[in-house]
Amino acid sequence: MTINEYKLFLESIDFVLKNTDFCVGLRMKSPQLINQNKDVENLIINLKKYKRFKLLNELNIERYSLLNVPDLIISCPVSTILFEALSLDKKLLIYNPLKRYIKIPNLLFNDREIIKCNNKKELLKAIYNLLNKSEHKYTSETYFIPAEKGIKNFDKIFN
Image 1: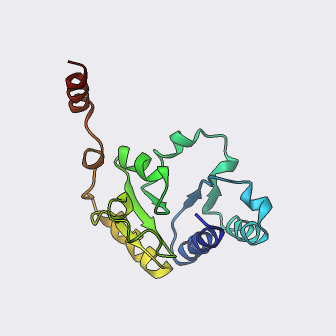
Image 2: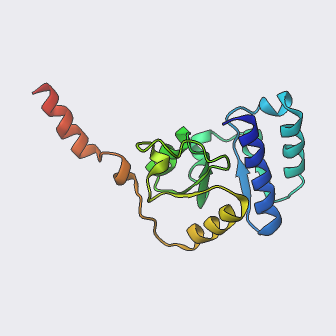
């Protein structure tokens, strides 16, 4: 994610917090970015003013344990969190404010079943839609081979 994308992502979190009563947790891949970029630092300082916002990097909780907590995971288009969320059957929303990667057909992000949005208003609408759905079309089995099938195929390689 570029710095500009990251700033848009943080501004969108602020938009969601201003317009909902949702609690938002943010886990930054590179928390040192706060000290390296004044704009990012100011955006994080502003977000911390909300009681419903937590910078998860500041909590002493292992990152994979955090994945079990949210009702919805929002990610940029190219991130390992996509696969982690899918493997846990979490509701997933991909936020792509700069509309990057949309012409790469085999990218997971471009699967038509995965909900995507490109601006703050679409983001808010998509969040409500996903949270109100009891089911989502994609599951871990959509993207991962179930273990028993994988083991059978693995055995074929060596036998």
